[in-house]
Length: 381
Image (cartoon, rainbow, N blue to C red; front, side, top):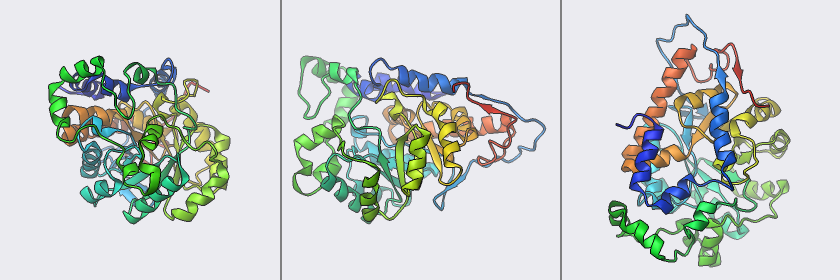
């Protein structure tokens, strides 16, 4: 019986070859930042208010003029086609059915146009890595034509974090077969049979661009997060010239960077440490959230990802000032367990836990969570 996201994690570990599961779970260096995300969320204390009418609990939020049924979405994650063929489309389907947004990664294994066409009614955002300005510009223009509703520029990857599990597993593009990899694949026959018709997935958004951006070298650079390290705040003007919709920065942890983002006309922030996959010394996302929210002063929405495993974690993020949260690994656990239905089941579990938490806290709406509490504290300064 799969009762929580940890149960789905166990099923994913059983269903996936080790090199795929390790890629999902991977963290930088010794994994301190990944564990800090989980530990600090657990340390947040919310004080319930009692004798409030919680007959009806409204979990919806409005973001950029669109109503979400729940105050969380599916975070952008790469190489979902290794978890399930057409994994990006399956996650988008699960999100749409649940009334929440799906953010597609530049490192997706389906073309952004195909994901949008498969789920035309869902709220979809496009995440951008900039390795090559011309290639990035093409992706932005394609996303605009495909009617993605917001653009997320990930800003915490000037260089890839040191993910040693991937190095030990020989995880690279192009894939180079080894005896260890072959045994890993052979001992997971169901996964292998699903993957067989389409072969090893590639970065479809790169192969679909013009010029040399779709080369094997560019795909290897994306896997290694070999980004354009000349990007600076002034670069945002270039993106603004290409993208007219909401523009968000993902990977903000410092309040001064939050203020600079507002000064440069950014429309939203995602407080994130890349799930602990970049800088192992970074603070947890939940501990950084209150400082960023205070620096913004309500001028633009602030979102958060990193370490969310329960609906109660989402309540904590909202109580500490987030407009909504994003969920990464748990959605992939569901995808590995049972495709779109598994991802939808994980969303449903988080939703049920959130409603229960809100009811126990005396909060009848997502927006009222901070006001409905006597205190919302994060013990880490």
